[in-house]
Length: 222
Image (tube, helix red, strand yellow):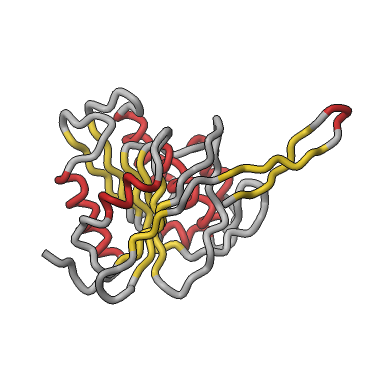
């Protein structure tokens, strides 16, 4: 998969830069397809490792889409397709930051570049991440039609380890506080003593239970 973006060449001319994405891994639902969750990996990781983990979760009614980011210093994920299914977005570390950015774009109704955000998000999960541009979020949402309603209705789960030495715990804690102060009323923040920059079964159990509830899934398999 590839996409093109502008870059400035010599003489101020704009050239087209090709960005090559890695493989997108899809975990298809083992039961009735009730929801789709786009899951974004962290820096240096890929969609494969997360798809293998997500496939083991007792969530038979979710279709997981796990893209692999391009190899470059900064990556941007956008353009979520409109769908008739319940749609969630989540991620770990950098992926969590992108998922939370996606939540703010949904609330504003547009991306940072002004393009419309057409997806209808029903749930957002961020593990060991942070909220980009948290200091300016309140100003961005002020005066935007429907922003308050979208913020109130969007459930967000944040999980963070207190022993995280890559993305400090306080970043996750402050992200939760910033979202709540900007009108996001359904924000759940879970902390884990001694957890570093990785995930553990008890954390994924929390994610499973939360998604089952917020996406109104028919139930988890054993």
